[in-house]
Structure formats: C-alpha cells, structure tokens
Image 1 (cartoon, rainbow, N blue to C red):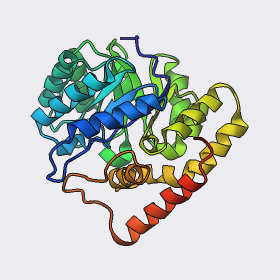
Image 2 (tube, helix red, strand yellow):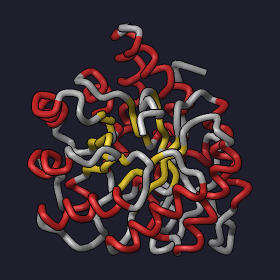
Image 3 (tube, one colour):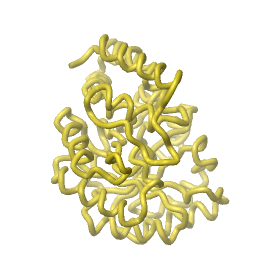
Image 4 (cartoon, helix red, strand yellow):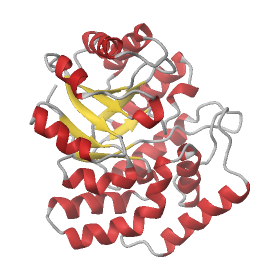
Length: 299
C-alpha cells in the first residue's frame, strides 16, 4: 500500500479517440509513453481528462489494460474510479487491481449528492473491495460535496485509504488537514492554478491537467520547489498561469486536448456530450497555447 511515493508530477492523461468516437488505443498509449519519456513521476488514467464517465464499463477496463501494458511498470498507474453507484465503483476497483493498476483515485458517486454517512460508506465499500491504495478526490465545485475533516476522521481506520487529492480552490485546506491529521493522509495538489501554493503548503505531489501539453515545464516546476529554488519555480509558474487557469473551467477537457493537439502530443477529439472548442473560445485558447509555446522557459 505504501509502495507509491506520491511525489512529483502525476498528469491526468487524456483518452484519445478515433474519428468515429471509438477509443484510439494506439494513440492513447502514445500519449502515456511520451509523458513518461518527458519525466513525469506517475500517471492518472481515466480521470476527468480521461473522460471516464463517457466510457462504458468494458471500454474502461480495456483502456486500463492498454495503459498498464504500455507503462510496463516504469511509473505508477493510478486509475480513476468514477461511477454512478457504490456497487459499480467497488466492482471496478476489484477489476482494476486484477488488470494491474497500482492505485485508485476514488471519486464520490456521480450525480447524487450524498450525506456524510453515505460518502463514508461509499469510500469504505470501495476500499474493502481491493488491497490497492486509495487516493480520495475532493473537488467540491465539480461534485457538490466536500470530503470534510469529520469524514476523513471516520475513515482514518481504513488502512488502504492513504491519500487525498485536494482540488478545493481554498488552499487553507492543506494546512487545516495537516494540522488535524499530520502524516495520516498524503496530500496531493489537484487544481492546477493553485498547485504551487499546495506544494509549498505540504502537498507531496501534483495531479495536473496541463502537464499533458507541457510536461517538461511541470516537471521542472516541481524539481525547482524540491531543491528550494523558489525564484525558478515562480518564473515557471507565472509563465504557466494563464494555461493553468483552464483547469478550473468547465471546458477543461476540451481546452487541454486542444493544447495537446497544438503541441503535437494528441488529438482534440472528445466524446459527446463534449464537443471540440469552437469560435471565440477556441481562438482564445489557441492564442494562449501558442504564446506559451513561443515563450516556454524549459525545453
């Protein structure tokens, strides 16, 4: 359970699609392989950027199998568990372990807004279905529920719940959680445009969206923080910030995939109900990415 250090950069990798919206497994493997070669420390597959909830059950398992195959143990593979019901989440967790995932990123059940007791039960049930380590995903703006301190206190006896991906925009959460729990839970920065703040306040690593387009800068940012070079870290962070803001928008998946395409790292194809960016928004994001590419501080 503690074999993963949770240190460094864990990009939330995209799932690539063919023109007919079927999964392009070869291109998806290419995305993962390129990120590893650029120095990332782990991979999140089938998260929000992986369009988990746009895939059916068989596709999720096939996508995970394909990811595990290409990664081949070079970095940890953390797979998103994002389901409508607790039973489906537990079944996927069990299957993910059999397929070869190294850890799970577990979301609250989709659509339904649970009570704290229901949220606790959901996480306990998923944890009981597997021996893999779990990272709970706290994102109140997206999922309308907060994994509160009281919920985490009641889950503290579950040994394989080891980490929390913190995507609340209020960075005081990092200090509050560390003050209450010490080292009981590993904290991961989960919102791109407060990642530096999270890392300085005690997060072990960064689950990042925009790393998919600019991995070298993301790795360099975390490396600068690790060696105490705040001047270099701030230089990269300030250059990166216009793009990092995209991670907090509702169209983050389309924006990140467009950025990947511009940078020659993937395709902007998404699965409906998402559609590729168009009009003024497409022009805005394109200009941001092209400016970043022309002024990149690394690579």
